[in-house]
Length: 112
Length: 446
Image: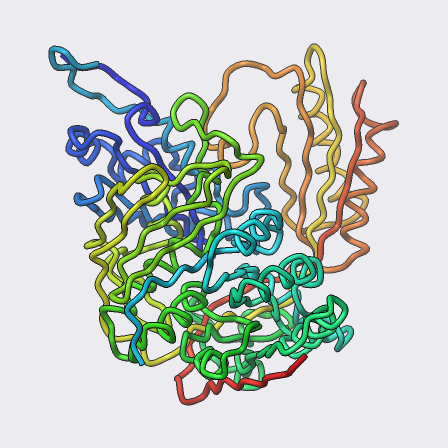
């Protein structure tokens, strides 16, 4: 059996910026979710959901020792804090937007 | 001589507008050897260059006086060394102001060091290549200045002179922490393993409250108590660079594996190659373990040789950022705000002949990056927010004027106009060979 959950229910995240590049690190709370998130939370999945803004290259670094991923998204900040007209020129909101994506997880007996 | 005890280093500020009271608490009862105030953002220094050009008495961090006045008495009494980049574009002036404050406070026998050499504006010309692919000339904007990110090396003379206060301009953020660690433990400049470990500590600490529960709380998922009295972090560092991150008892916030992991990758690209002027650090081998409540152990960082050039930030005149808004509420509020936005767009073209891109957000319906998603409900309490980047102050005033004129000439029920004009800089990155950058240290006495 499986069900859809918001990534926020199984992971936490933080966003940072360098110029016009945003990075969002995502860590699963439970190491049992690492594989399913690795399979589904891909660069393509981000582009499918935020295609209008994520027009640049997206690199995903995997950190299995820390149960985490680091997404480096080029040209994701409408020019960056120096040039963007977006109120959130730093892209601080990116972590929460990504945590709002859906992930399909398996439900085993005795787990939620 | 190499030391074998634990070095206790705290963070008193993680950005220029950071809180003051957690730093005072740290110097008063943290039992610290040193405290670092990191107050220079990516663009802050460009504004400081401008301030200095307008008046040679300015160009340092605006809150310098208030921070020093609050921190110095306890820092000197408790022998806590202060390391800070609050000098910004004018470290000599910041040092003299600090000296004057120390005198006013009746403190004597203090050595205040300042470090210069990060301002490399003279070494950058129209043909200097930028990382973004063009030259300085091809940017097509007025050149403001260029600064190099100095490393821990630049602070060693001040530490060897036992200065109690060390004031710098641009130094790579982790290096502000690596320098006192390197000095205390006698790490050599090519001890990549130790410098890598020290850089992890510096990177984790440099944003102050971001590792003690700030920039973290998410009610229901990640609850944090006491954010209004957030404690700032302490790193208890061992001679080999292993560390425990903690905070003072009785302060708000939390230090746990989640806060440490999030900060470990904050503003990091390739975690296996975190490059500073001191070392190329490897974060992928870092181990994070809970030692006790609010005590997290850090170990296992790696390091390889530092790059042979410095990173520069090159700043250009960015004109002005003009922002203005009006609010609407009740039935069809969103439709009225959208109508108001179209009116502003039309008039900026027809009346002001403005070609600068105009962004219109309806705050409450969609703003920020959330504009990439669709929200279906019509909002009944929204704010029109118009923003434009322009060349002259007069052009900026035109946008504010147009938005304010909506009060009488726009849709029904618009109120709460506010507008602001902010001078702007644009920055790019470049490289400079190490031999072309020379750090200098001066020491003044109280």
